[in-house]
Image (cartoon, rainbow, N blue to C red; front, side):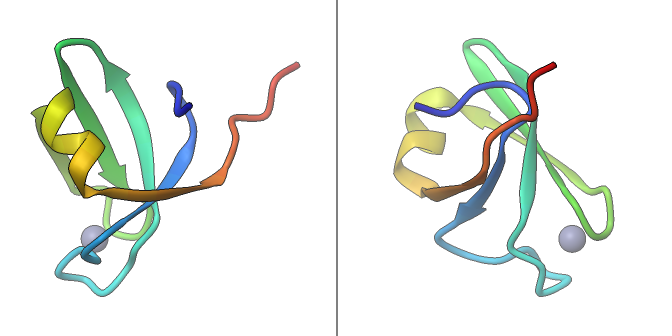
Length: 62
Ligand SMILES: [Zn+2]
């Protein structure tokens, strides 16, 4: 399961052609930030569940 700080791949890349997004907020809505251009997208969790393809990197825990 994904969690805050994970890097995920979506079914569609961002307009900048990057497909690496960091989960920056989790709640009723989920906010993801494009790693390349820092663009932030917010969407309902249900929609995120449909659009997220896979987790690329788990958040590094210390
Ligand atoms: Zn981007």
